Amino acid sequence: MTFLKLITAAAACLSLVEANPILRRQLSFDYNGEKVRGVNLGGWFVLEPWITPSIFQPWANGGGVVDEYTFTQTLGKTAAQQQLEAHWSSWITEADFQEIASVGLNHVRIPIGYWALNPLDGDPYVQGQLPILDQAIGWARSAGIKVLLDLHGAPLSQNGFDNSGRYGPIQWQQGDSTAQTLTAIQNLADRYAGDTDVVTAIELLNEPANWGIDMDALKQFYYDGWGNVRTQNGDTAVVIHDAFEDVQSYWNGFMNAGSGVNNVILDTHIYQIFSDGEVAMKPCDHVQTACSSAGKLAGTDKWTIVGEWTGAQTDCAKWLNGLGKGARYDGTFAGSTGYNGNCDTKYEGTVDGLQDVDKTNLEYYVEAQLDAYEAHSGWIFWAWKTESAPEWHFQNLTRAGLIPQPLTSRKHPGQCSTTTCMIPGN
Ligand SMILES: *[C@@H]1O[C@H](CO)[C@@H](O)[C@H](O)[C@H]1NC(C)=O
Image 1 (tube, rainbow, N blue to C red):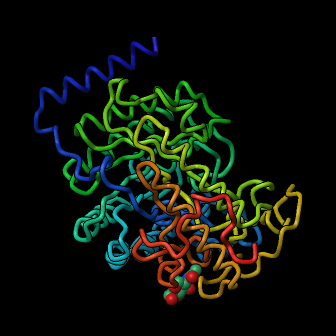
Image 2: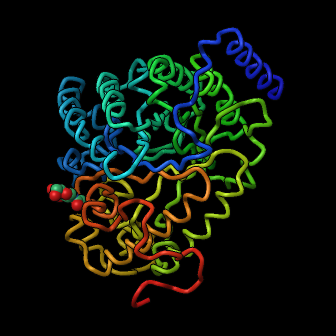
Image 3: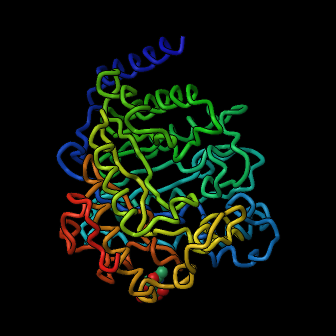
């Protein structure tokens, strides 16, 4: 029955495209021939305490504000609106788009919550993001940057992370939440239907957590969401996140070119910092692990991007694991098992203030990841900027010479062609 539903949805869309030649537009980025090189504009339209700790500082010692939901709930609509308007209009500006283009990047991924697109009765969230997003698409157009619009938060939370808007239980798919999410996608596709020269891709949902959701229902949602985007145009790429499942063994065969859908991109996120074992790894282990992902990426049967990755080899950044929570790296995270070193300059600080040894390790690690993540369709770094998390700040890392310029040059070439550790002192 599910299968029949999928086929019917796909057939309906194809005939719609056939009947409306105007809907057939050329994709304005060549995902076959060019590499995606991008940054995430994180912490802009979806608050994350660790990206902008200053916004959450009043609750540093408690008070129950841990995400955008509790932030808006606690402040109330008027005060929340005022603070968020100020944040939206200053965190990213046209100058950022110009600089993003000037360092050789060709994409930005912009996270947005369902509450900006399909506000629900009873939610504390406030709106006003879309006029600024409209402006950003104009800035991207002027700068020659392509935009991947990424639905980062779904009603009832698809992963329970603060970055879904609401920290806590994973309850997405309950009640009407799947239909409400599809409406949000439809509204997004409708609004930017005339901007396919810039908006080349729409991501249906960021990081749905396979451990808390029904995966068959997620797959049906992916087909339905693809159909929603296709009501507006035939070519915009539709991005599906891997839900933390294996990009080959789990996802090969699904929504590939042979399954009746076109222009699907699989998005996988590669971090090596969210377990005790990973934060205990030595710099060369991090490099080798990054390199080992190249084969995985190359062997997928659809376009595949690494839509999030970082220069960080630790989870030291303040509140990265949630407001008020510590780090596994230095053993301050509840339940973590060891001490691997101190978080001093990595907890809060600047790129310039990093210790030399950290700068060196980061430089090798970033280059190895660039080598590996271009094995298929390319990559998008998390994030363009942060208030005080140096290892996550693409702009400052580039200005400091720790990310290569041009992006294809290498100070340490060939790291993924050898098992020898090239990092001095390791
Ligand atoms: C990034 O650079 C700006 C400008 O120099 C500086 O004010 C800011 O503190 C830096 N942030 C980080 C995390 O390096």
